[in-house]
Length: 133
Image 1 (cartoon, rainbow, N blue to C red):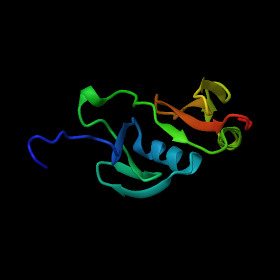
Image 2: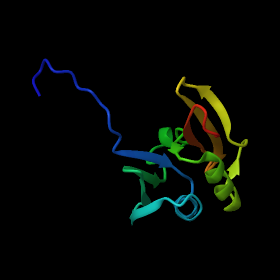
Image 3: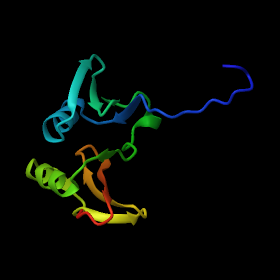
Image 4: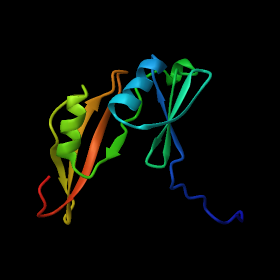
């Protein structure tokens, strides 16, 4: 890259999620949400595959990182069915799936849930206009 070219970030390679209890969080993300566990490492650390993005669960390495994480939006094709199945597994949703925005050709549907580690995440589905959510 030349000095005149601008750096442009695009792909996310890994997201770190600070947790209070790595074993409990690992069980939730693996057994309840159904993410594929890639590996565990000393620290303790757990790494998952979230559709090609590596998700790392760990204790906060410094006090400034010891807080709930950013919101992770998990893309699903059928938000109603994903909500039903995850609710049956014990996931606590803040509200049922709801239409959050009309994007013209698609409707954006969201459903926010708690992960048991003081973080909120969401299911996200973009539904073509005219197709039920």
